[in-house]
Image (cartoon, rainbow, N blue to C red):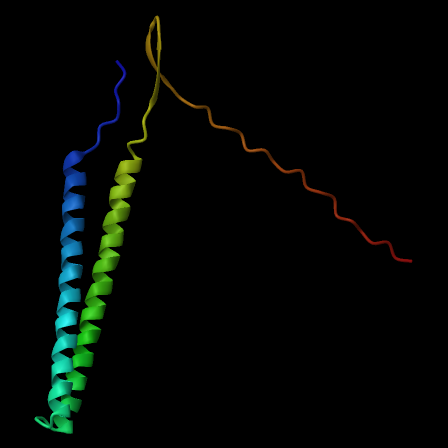
Length: 132
């Protein structure tokens, strides 16, 4: 009896769920980065108003840059993870390419395409320059 392909739905659902979680984590890190930007802008405003010293602002600059590097690294890592999960889901879905069936009076048959033979290119003879 002919059988069609069946997708492993649990695996696919797990991949989609994890992909969604990674997307939320990326968004959370971006929001965290935005809050650091706003916090630093407040620090600059306080420095402009003369409420904090230049040394305190420089300390804040170093801390902010360190946080930016940490968050950027985490966001890039999660983007790579999302890419991997997307490729895995794509691979799983590509495996579901339909089989080709044909119905005949004697039953249903699976058509198997014959592999095409690769045509070999005929090598051209090298042209030899004659010495005069």
